[in-house]
Length: 77
Image (cartoon, rainbow, N blue to C red; front, side, top):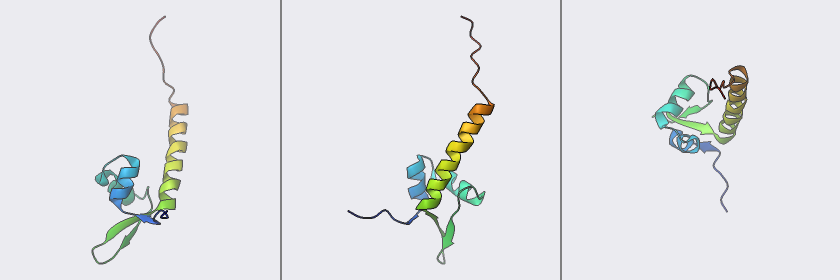
């Protein structure tokens, strides 16, 4: 069994999050998802632990949003 890699490419992160690499790049550039830039060509890498922390933060933010913006069913019975 191989151990999960410590660092992921933006494409790997996009696959985990089921989104596009462009969206992941935007998250990184806005500072929402911590990443490092390595090598002469400036390839981005996201540490697996940072991705997990980001996911947990998004759960908390989503719960807060849902709590503050309850779904109101305007249909009459």
